[in-house]
Amino acid sequence: MKKVLALTLLFGGLTASFGFAKEHPGKEEILKNGYKGPATCEECHPGKAKEFLGTVHWTHASKVDHVDGIKPDEEVGMKNRIYTMCNGNDIVNNLKEVQPNAKGKTKFTGCNTCHPGDHASDVGSTGPAAEAAVDCLLCHSTKYDFSKRKPIKQKDGKVIIGQDRSVEAAANLGRPTNKTCMTCHEAAGGGVLIKRGFAMTADADVHAAKKMVCIDCHVVKNHKIPTGFDPNNWAHDGVRVSCVGACHTEKPHKDADINKHSAKIACQTCHIPKTGGAIAKDFTKWEKLDNGFWEPSTLKKEVNETTPVYAWYNLTVANRPEFIGPKGSRTDGKSKIYPFKVFQGKAYFNKKNGELLSMDFAPPMANGDTLAGVASAAKIMGIKNYEPVPGWQTIYFGSNHQVVSKGKALFCSSCHAPNGILNFKELGYSNEEILKLTTPDLYFEKVLKKQEDW
Image (cartoon, rainbow, N blue to C red; front, side, top):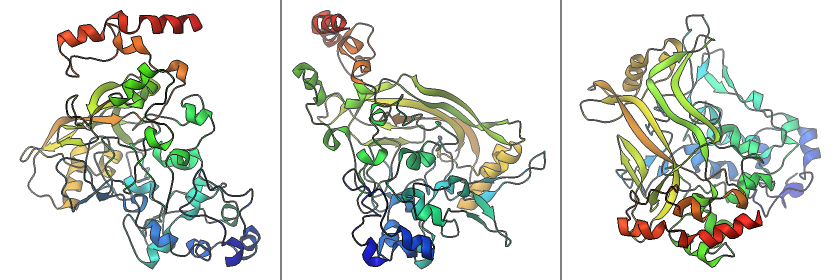
């Protein structure tokens, strides 16, 4: 089997340039001998499971050098971060069974339910057992049964995550699709389209309309997946992706006047005029659902329903208990104007030091007792000296998806008309400059020409 598969590129190379043939070589071997997890894959791709253990998708944390207040040697990410979109992390909200609610029902909860292991080998684990627990087919099978990726309580009481290691899944391999990525990323933050509020569908994004998939832009190498520069996205594999460089140039337009804007205006500002998802969430007040369980009170918008706010961003991040968002100015020589979705979350802060407290979701999910959730999280984290008080935190989420077609992108008058979308005053322009920036001389002829073309 090793010779049959040797010329294929299953792990770490599923990019736009390297796709599978119509049928992955070795299918007959798998059908004959079955699938034994990563051991089967490693007959031809040795060392790839161990390689995967070093990526953010497994560790849920990395060293961070662009965020205020993070020590250079500290690894931070969803494993241990606390912020008000989630108000928890893999440590305090590890996979567990919720105590019975008033109706006697129970269920499982845990921030790490999307972790591509089996939970017995959990976030950041290493060694042979962890390597054997990697769910290779979750990303690499075209016929993966996602219904099998669910918590299971074993006879010994331990909770694990099931995997589809069926022969059918293993025998049907191919490039990851949008569904592959969005199964986890679309459901982050407590439900579908909550966190960032974008959908990679043909009617929502031009890239999807062109049948592009996530990894066409987030080009994978050695299992490292490039991420963008969302101020709220801290952990990364050391590789980044942006519009310019990945596919587009510094001068992507035929119009030279529009190209001049690229020096100070990010591509997303004109090409992503709307976003969606949650705009506010209250972890101090949970709502009871019809099934007897509780969830945080949430205000949310549909895809392409929310108008962004605009701010200068030099790709470094302000990180304070009350605010997480872009740093930058029009004079620092590094910033561009970017669009952001503003999210505001209410949670409990420690009155003694002003820091945000985490919450174990299991208690309030069963009975709505939010303070019990704070107490449980404090116990898990070894925090003894605290006094919970409610407060708000504002977070700026970057708008990097929902790219509209050229005809729907913002045009000259969208910003330069007196009632344009940009607040030039807040962006640091003087009254005299604003008068020049909002004169029809800047846009009248171009808008008129576009109007005639319609």
